[in-house]
Each structure stands twice: as C-alpha cells, then as structure tokens.
Length: 95
Image 1 (cartoon, rainbow, N blue to C red):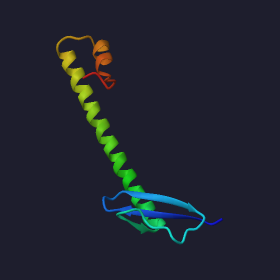
Image 2 (image 1 turned 90 degrees about the horizontal axis):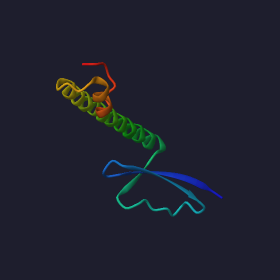
Image 3 (image 1 turned 90 degrees about the vertical axis):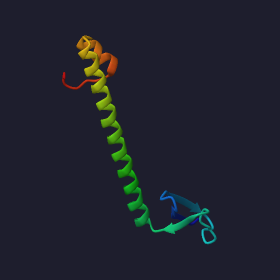
C-alpha cells in the first residue's frame, strides 16, 4: 500500500502535515490551504518553533521581573527575606 505525506500552508501562516495511505492521487487540500514542499514545511515549522520559543522567553523574563518587583516591594516594607521569597517565588540575588 502506498503512503504519501502532503504538506500544506494556510493563509494565516499555519501549516499542516497529512499522511495518506492507499489511493493518494485524488486527495484535495483542506479549504484555504495550498500544498507546499517538505522543505518549505520544515522551514515554516522551524520559524514557528523559533517564534514560540522567543515568546516563551519573553514571558519568562516578564514573570521574573514581576516576581523581583514584588519581592523588592515586600522587602521594602520589612518582610523578612525568606518570607518575601516564598510569597513571590523570586529566587534571584537579594536586591
């Protein structure tokens, strides 16, 4: 039985991979999708994964900054260091 992998790109930039077993000659693409090569699919996937990682790193940095700001605010009003760290989750150096 023949197996074929078809790669698609949608107008919104999303991508899809479809594996077909059996009669593969009459496969229509999903609505709004265009067939692309495996190389184009891999490049688009790498770009999406890089963008996701960048967003994850930015969110992590924002969270760390909020935790540090909260920690510093608690320390400024006299909350002991250990308690301020436990309440905020901040584990960086003491400010």
